[in-house]
Structures are given as C-alpha cells and as structure tokens.
Length: 218
Image 1 (tube, rainbow, N blue to C red):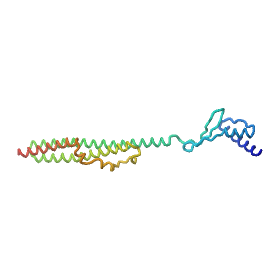
Image 2: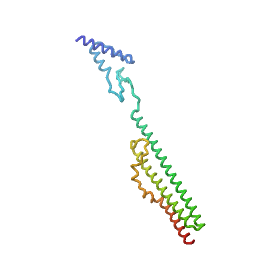
Image 3: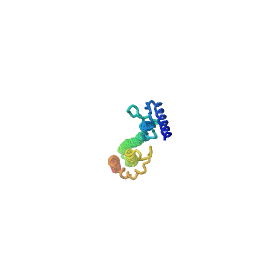
Image 4: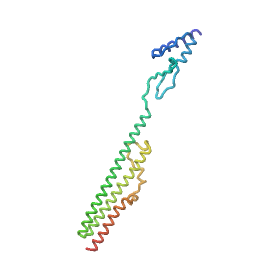
C-alpha cells in the first residue's frame, strides 16, 4: 500500500513540475492523500474543442487558465459560406450581364424596325409602288419574330436569375442551363405581348394600308 502511495506521490510531483514549466505555480505536496487531491483539482481535462483543439485547464491562485495546443484556424464553416455567397453574387452578375445584353439587342431591333419601315413606306408613297410597301411590311414581320426571340430569352434568364437568387445551392455554380425554364415561357405569349403587338402590329397595319392605297391609285 505504501508503494502505491509513493507512486501516486511521484506522479503528482511530476505533473506539478510539468505545469510549473508552463508558468503555473505548483502547490507543495505534504503527503499521498494531499497529492492525489491536488492532482484531481489541478488537472481537469476539458472536452475537445472544435476541429481537434485540445485544452488543459489548470488552477492557479484561484483562477482557471486554459492552455490550448494545436488550435485550428477560426471560421471553418463560416469561410465556406462566405465563399459560396461570393460565388453566388458573381453568378448573378453573369446572368444580369446576359439579361442586359438581350435587352440591348431588343432595343436595337426596334430601332432598326422603325428605320426600315419609315424608309420603305416613304419610298413607296413617293413612287406609289405597293410592292415596296409589301417589302417593308415583310421586313417588319421578320423583325417582330426576331425581337420576340430575344424577349423570350430575356424572360427565361430572368427566371434563372430568380432561381439562383432564391437559394445559393440551387444550381451548380456559374451554370447557365435554362432548359427547366423554357416550358414556362411560351413563344406565342411573348410574340403577342403588348409591347411587341402595339409596335409591330401598328407598322404592319400602316404598310398594308399604304400598299392598298398605292395599288388603287396606280
């Protein structure tokens, strides 16, 4: 029994010497019972921290001190979420750039439509040639089809933008796949939308009217 007490005393003294190297004061050990109590109170293991961080708690002058070893860098999951958010913002910026380009193409088509229609109808009126009116009307109809295509693509990419914005993990990063949204934007709905019907329908009606008048006069 005395041998066991001596071994416990030796372990306690060694533990206290180790803590003295770390800067903590070790209390004197008068006997085996006191050393056992000092060992239990001086060294209390703390549960393992996040990512394998180990801590040893020691008692020094009535205060608890923590000595941390192999501390992992802070912000593990937070850094991942921050990276995902940054990539999501870049993804949205790419989609927005495509939407802006499609809207710009639609504006240019409308501008060219008005220019071509005005030139064709003006020449037809001067020459009283109904065939020029028909050519101008067909050009307006072709621009109408082309403009409806760009408008449909713009609406599809707007749906993609809302889908990516609603959830960071909704789609693979930087994906521009729009297949799932095509069925939600119908061609005839876009073709006969108010913005397109008013402009192109009016120009076609003017062209047909001028062709009838020019043919009747000539």
